Each structure stands twice: as C-alpha cells, then as structure tokens.
Length: 54
Image (cartoon, rainbow, N blue to C red; front, side):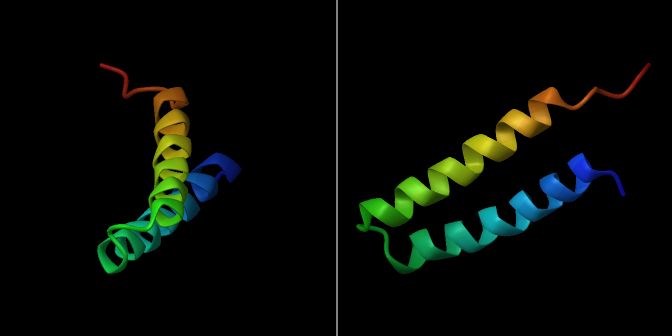
C-alpha cells in the first residue's frame, strides 16, 4: 500500500470516529470543527488521486 493510500485509509477511519463524536455531541462546535477538518482533508486527498483510466 502506498503512503498516500495509507493516509487516505487513516483519514477514512478518523472521519468515522469524528462523525461518531458529532452524533454523541451534536451541539459541540469543537467536535464539529474537528470533523469538518478531517472531511476536508480526506476530500482534498481523494480529489488529488488520479481517476480510473477508461
């Protein structure tokens, strides 16, 4: 597994944990901000990944 794939996998797991935190504390702005950061970081990495070739 490449370093980028490992980073993506790590961020996917972190995203699940953060979203569980949001479910547990829906009114906590710090929890929401942390979840937003993880989602944005994962989105940026996935957008940078080369797409499948046709």
